[in-house]
Image (cartoon, rainbow, N blue to C red; front, side, top):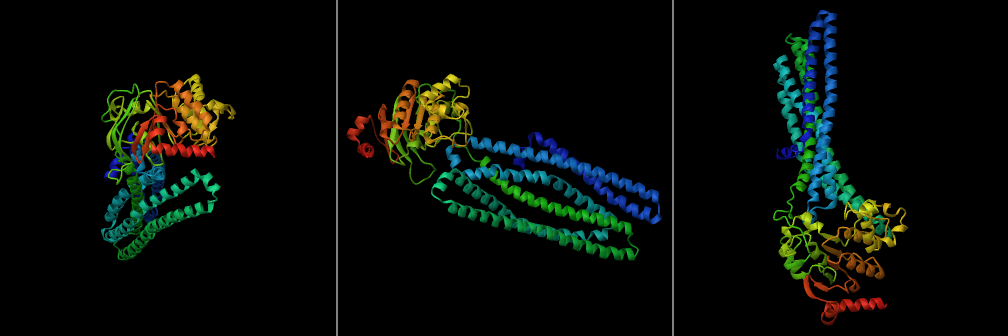
Length: 577
C-alpha cells in the first residue's frame, strides 16, 4: 500500500481524469448489469406470451443500454489514457530532478544504463498498468459483487456453485503471481544489461572497428539478449497460465450450472428465462474474475518497476545546502586543511590522505603526478562534486559547505579530463558557460582558447551543428571549445584537468599566455602530464599515492624532488627521440 500511496502523490492535476474514468466505468457497468434482467423478462414474458410489442420495447431498452455502455467505455478508455500518460510524465520529471541533484557519489551507486531503464521502461510499465488496468480494475469488483448478488436473487441454489469456483480460481492466481513477481524484477535487471552493452558499443564504436572486435561485441550482446529472452519467456509463460486456469474454472462452472439448472427446469423449479439470465450473470462473474487476475499480473509487474524507481527517488543526497549561508566566492583562495577522501565509506584505503595545501587567490598552480595519484579527485572536492571524508576544504577562508552549491559552482569553471560537448550548434555549446554572453564575449573567449584558429574551417562557423559528444570535431578542437566555454563564465577559480593533452605545444603556449591576460585575478589550477604545461606556474604540487609529496617552483622541484626529476628526464628523453 505504501507503494501506491507514494505514486498516488504524482497524480496532481490528473486526478480529475482518474475520477471521470472511474465514474464512466461504474456507469458503464451498471448499464451492462441491467441488460440480463431485461433479457430475462423479454424471454419469460414477451416470448412466452407471444407479445411482440413487449419484445420490441425490451429489445430497444437493451440496445439503449448497450449504446450508452459503449459510449461510457470509450470515455473511460480516454480518461484512463490521459491519467496514465500524465502520471508517467510526473514520475519521469521527479526522477530526472532527483538525478540532477545527485552528487558524484550518489551517481556512482547507479549504472547509467540502469538509470535509463528506470526512467523509460519502468515508468512505461507503470503507465501501462494505469492505462490498461483502470477499467478492469474498477469494473471487475463491481461486476463481481453485483452479478453474484443478482445470481443469488435469481436462484440461491445455483449460486452456491460460485462458492466452489471462486476459491479454486483464487488459489490458482495466488500460485501464479507468487512465482512470477520475482521474475519481473529480474527481467528489468536484464533490460539494464542489454542497455549497458548497447551503450558501450555505440560509445566505443571506433575502438570496436579499429580492433576488429565486432564479433566479440556481438557475442556479448547475444549473451545478455538471450538472458533477457530466457527470463522474459519464463515470466510470460507463467503469466500465460492465468488464461487456461480461468477457462478451466469457467467451463467447469458453466457445465455444473447447466446440469443443475436443467434438472431444476425439468422439475419445474426454474424458468428457462431465469436460467438464461443466470448464465449471463455467471459469465459476467467469471469474466470479472479473469479481468481481476490480469489486473493482478499488471500490478505485480508495475510494483516491481515501482520499487526500482523508488530506489532512485529515495536515494539520500549526500551533498546539500543544509549548512549554506548567503555568501559568494569573492577572491578564489583555496585551502585544503588536512583533507582525506574515500569514494565509499569504510573502504580499505584512502584515495587522498592528509592533504594540507594552500593556493593563493590569483595564483597559477600546477598539479602533476603519476597515473592514479588522485589529481582529478583533489580538484573535484573544491566545487563539492565529492565531499571530503576528513578535514576541510576552504574557499576564501570559508568551508565549502557554507557556500550555496549554485554560487560555489558558478564561481568555479572546470574543464574535465573527459571533454563533453552536447548536440546543438557550436554557439549553443559555448553559451553553457554564459547563457546571455554577447557576440563580442564569445569571440574574445574563443580567441584566448585558440578556437578562432579553426572555427572558420567549420561548415557554418559558430552555427555548425555538433554531433552527440562532438563527434564531428577533433580531440584538440573539442578541448579548445570546452576551454572557451569555461572562460565565458569569468570564474574566480579555473580548473583545467589535463585539458590540453590533445593540443600541440605551440597552441598550448598561446592558451597559457592568453589565460594570464584574460583572467589575471583568477586562481588557475592546471593538472597535466607534461611538465611543459605547468613549467611557468607560480608553484607546482607533486601528488604521489594520494599525498602531497612536495610543493615548489619548477627549478626548486627539479633541484630537490626525485619524482619530479624522473618525470622531467623521461619527458626530455622522449622529446629527444
